[in-house]
Image 1 (cartoon, rainbow, N blue to C red):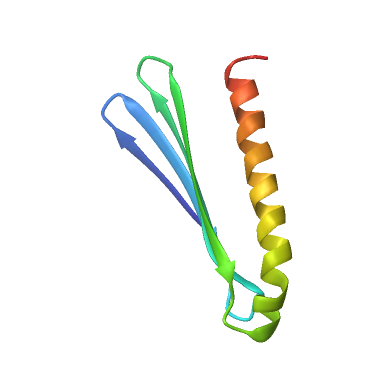
Image 2: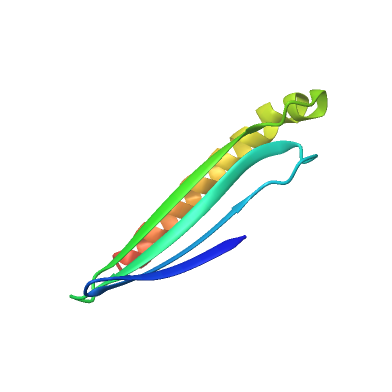
Amino acid sequence: MRDCRRTIPNNIVSSASYATLDGHLLAGEERVSVILRGNDAVDVDIVSFSRSAPSINGRIVWPFIGRMQKQFFLKEMEHLSRIATCK
């Protein structure tokens, strides 16, 4: 996991990222960045990438896990959207 905080003029940026380790059934990484702008607006940037690991086991489980990951990510985005619009 990597945590990075930096300041852009009139903004505060915080990012965290992590990646899978060798031997894991999947290969991928995620990064979440939050920017607090000088006008009190907040931007959230989420980057997610995954695929099966090169092992036979990784290729076998990927069709199932890949679908679950996609559903989870879509629900996560829907939830963040609801929070952002206070619904």
